[in-house]
Image (cartoon, rainbow, N blue to C red; front, top):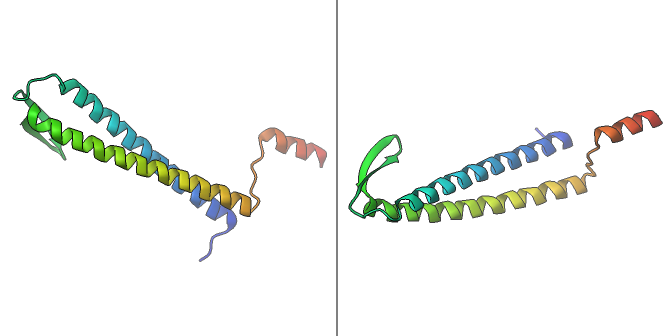
Length: 118
């Protein structure tokens, strides 16, 4: 089954929205992780702390959590960078699709003016 131009364009825009949503979610996760690391930065390494692993609350020490948290932050930074790149590529793909198929958007005012002319 082949898609019409409108369906294909809508599909591409939906893909872009999904990529952007995931990018935003990863950025929020990154900010939370960085905030936690900042909060525990000056605590004693032997101090008891808890972290959520999946759905289980696990007891650890600050000294055990810091390296794991730093690693997770680096992984999140890489994931955010990858999603940012994917969003940019998808935006270029959509722009090229628009140009190749001469798809233009009209504002409500433009549509009203065209209706008056006809």
